[in-house]
Image (cartoon, rainbow, N blue to C red; front, side, top):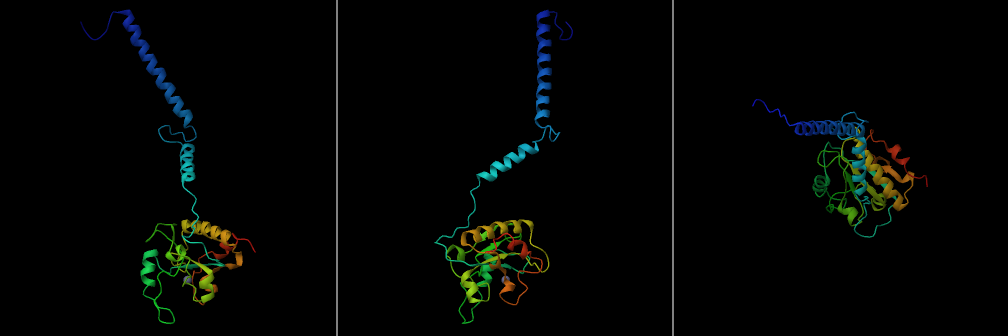
Length: 221
Ligand SMILES: [Zn+2]
């Protein structure tokens, strides 16, 4: 006997049938994949629509961030924007530095002067918003250089030196969400969203910070 040929006709028929089955089956599968992924024309990759679907459902699964304090919230009337004036930083690094400072009476600061810090990817994740102990415990700030604004203003510091380079896109997006949430909750109108330089003579939050853009997000009041 040579080779693997068979002279049994029914066996040959079965073998041909199997080949046709696999051939047709494979074509069908390929067509289905091609149709299913036709928007990207890359059948072996996940389609854009599917990917977007996954992203949306994952986003929806994340609970909404409300930045609620741990105690009943005080009456806040201002939102005061700062930059750190540094290339990098975090709540912890600013907290350490501010604990070295003393007020006009010589008393040491409690710690970080701000209520919120927004990272730029150096020291904290880009666009991450972190509430400090002053927000969690609803304490006055130490950021404005003005006792009235310190007692009524929510101090928000973005890491970066906006005299030299602008905030990152993720910082701006995070700040947009933060100020609209806080302003809505506390009824803060447009004119009370201010930069540090509106309170005292300083470059903060820097010439490249788009303050007016954020004011436009709030009602005139
Ligand atoms: Zn400032």
